[in-house]
Image (cartoon, rainbow, N blue to C red; front, top):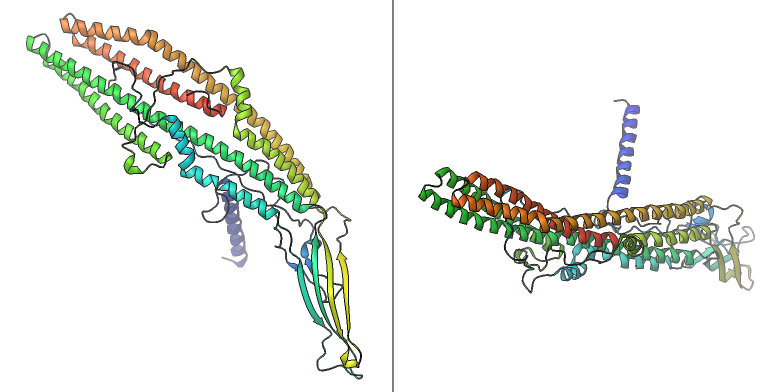
Length: 521
């Protein structure tokens, strides 16, 4: 490979690595322990580029002496400002997938209402309270709030004065008439930066508004983690109810198996009839085993969210029901305005607009650098080599960057554009929130009507058909296939009813998530 080819290859590799690093910073969280946020970008934080904090600039040197204060190099570099680094925001927790319920095996509606669980079981309200208090993901995200408070502290720090002392006109040997020079001079001076454009105040305002955005983002993370809790809690209820349906189906099939064996002894049924029922019973027992494991797995998932030790997960009992005990949800005309006012993600963007406006003020304040006041309280000139009395003096001076050019025009324009961009993002999010509420409300209403129809008409018809087929089989008027066909149709209806119950209970809780407020139990 030629030298030129090696150079091109090396540049290409460096470009790829740099691009990968940029994508990692943009698309994913910061590396653990890096000190950066493990979360996303806060709304309204794109107005001001990162800039060094107070005291991070190197010093512009000059010839020693009273007329040359030591000042930061920023006064000679266009685009250099004292700014607050944009704070990353709180990332959203990933959605928890729903547990898969057993899809095979017969199911039967048990006698009696759905049990709510033991009196000392974990209720949904108790689960929410525990989630907010002990969930490790939320606890980690909550640390972003004190980190934002630390940013406020950093933004409000003042630049330290610069102390400088020197001695000049020091001879190699001594001065004389043949080698005149001097006198030797000793200087002590202090350079004090003067923030005449209010950069520190603007920095603090940006950091304070950024903290409010982070607080709203944390509330949104809580909202979505509660939605994950809804999913896990309903998974436990659904698995528990499926287990009850499967157990009832097995008990019913055992009775039918005994009946079929009795009919075989009378000569009214064959060995093949007995085998068919035994196959159905085997399927029911397998479905029961899968339902038991699904329930255990759902409890483990709920235990992880609630920081319950794994060894206690199997013993976790919940108290709740899939049944809808409320008269209905508020109207869509009430839900959408409630969501627009209550959703914390919308609040984060509204606060982000204020933060972006504060960025504009900071960019304007950064258009001019600090003034530097030189106070030189002590200057000593040693005149003893000239047989004269030594002299003491003081000096005062100021370094002023002349504002002939606005050196922050690009950053000011960027900050103003960021305000408009954040406002557009807010409008888009408001539209998406309204659509999300509409979809959640329709899903709730449709599943509610489906349950009413299944309970009021479809299930009673299917049960009567099954009972009639069983009576005809028991009396010998019809063969076993008539009963098995009726049983299969009944199982399909029961499975549809179970799935609709679960979807409706999820729909109730998802409506809460979409609105951002607990409106349904």
